[in-house]
Length: 524
Image 1 (spheres, one colour):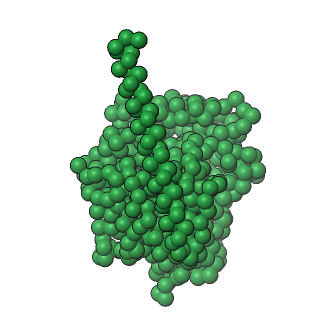
Image 2 (spheres, helix red, strand yellow):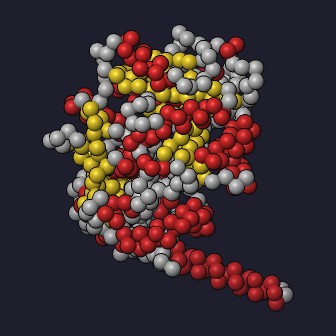
């Protein structure tokens, strides 16, 4: 054996023994912690060993093995778990809502996962009807049904899919077609109860513990676990006129979308979204995905001959009362549509109840479950793209990389920066107007579509193309595997984000699945 080979062998031997020693120490520490944990009094319950769904998520691309799943009954249970983890060199804590993370963000490998759904669902409308106090583990669907059915009230800002927890969406942003009016869901809460990374149970608001309040909103779970939120309410309408209009030119689509979202409040629709679809008869990606009523199919002969590989659909909704005359609603709709340039005879509309409109994705969920694709992997990609670069994004991504679709919705619609408070932890591109782009991929079994690996590679190609072309964008529901990736994502907000971490979770106990800060990280 040569001297060089001998040195390499010794280094490897020492390294392997160091790894074994570290693993033995971690295992011993875990055993010690579990002994202390089992002696801790909780009002809720704990599941050890086989932890099932807590090691998986909706994305279906990550898995982990937590030490235990905590099912708290009260906020103090959550605080006790965090305090215990703070005494360990390695243990972490992740809050899990309804399991709809995409990239393992709510996982805690060899740590504790807190099942927020186990806490009693609390939805209490305030005496004035202006707000509801809601538990962090409540689903938005539950909030909708309780407030509308019991009080004729509803939150102002929603997500498209309502099977998400209140605490989960507030930790990210919460975006839908009402965001251009009221801002994201993070702009529609006035008070939170938060368990910090120090194990402190803290009530915070714009005026009380405000630094924690704004840190937690859009904070990706890094500063605290939301156990209660005070959500703003307004009177709920009975009915919705739901309309879709087709465009063949992206410039006209964006012009009209921006026209609608920048009108004075009360002089536009109550909901504005949009999506891209393939210019073909593909049942999932193409023309059949547009009509709202099966009795009125898509007439492809109405598509202009100049149309390219993809088309665009502007989707709007107008609230009205059940006893409003159809003619009155119709006149109002025509007034609002007057300046728009959509393709003639490619307009679809239907009247539905307010509840049915907001639960529209739940119907798609049932169909997906029946078809066996809901539980398949979901390599979704969500971005915020500056208005100045959205046309280039269309050229590079929609018309090129994604010209055959993604096997699910490709959402794109404008948002107003003025509706977002820059004191929160959310990161946005520059400019007064930016677009959300949501590529909601579904993996179809038994078809010749892209594999999961190919979908992930295509997502990476999209991100690379955005960077190569110098587009101003930010990932929404971001996922990075390196400190440099996160540092680039936050840009000039990185220092503030680190300082907030040092203040509210100095030992980096919370949300390890985000892969932003390692345990016992130090502010540098």
